[in-house]
Image (cartoon, rainbow, N blue to C red; front, side, top):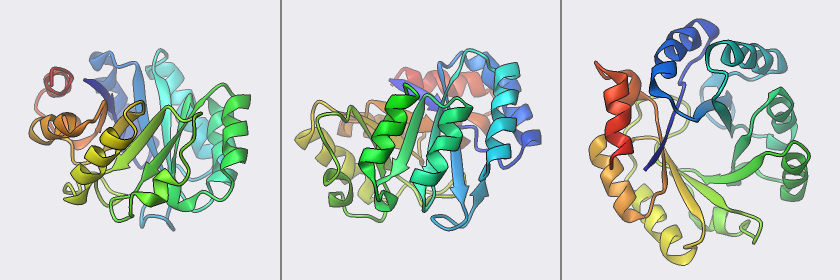
Amino acid sequence: MEVIPSLNCPDLACAKEKLAMFAKLESAWVHIDVADGRFTPAVLWNGVSSAEELFRLLAARAPKAAVEAHLMVEDPEIVAPRWLAAGAKRIVVQAETVRDLAALEALCEKYHAELVLSIAHSSDVGALTGFLSDRMTSVQVLAVKPGFSGEPLEGEAMKKIAFLHKHYPSLLIEVDGGVTAETGKAMKEAGADILVSGSFIWNAAKPKEAYQALRKL
């Protein structure tokens, strides 16, 4: 199972602490939540200077890790260029907020980055499938209420994973939120290919062992 650790940090001080542990995980990717205080109640890394500061820190502390930026924002077409220019290799955008998919695809092509569409815990899966095309290789199921770390798994998430796995078998399915060793196993059985985990890893007494437990699912 591919596992992407989520940094789950509101500021650089927290990021420095987490990245000290992240280096021991030897993960190829790191997941960054970006929130504007409108799509979610939280505000995380919402600004050009924030993106640049975080990438400078990542370059120093985790130079080999590629960044997946999850844009939980109302205007992804405006926010995405900041993160792509800063160095993100994958942009995850909420399908509920997309107004111009072609523009986002063109941006990602320009920066040689991957575009992934996500469906929120409370949305009908049709909000996502209406955007899917032959160019899409991955989708994400946001399995918790967006904005804060440690939220409980929402019951409809498993149904969304199973639906996408059945009807779009060629797509890689990433699941973000509510991931533990127990729920991760169920997500895999439902069809998940990639798990994004924050609290389960960072709150463990031994983060590397928690990360490896998910990898072995």
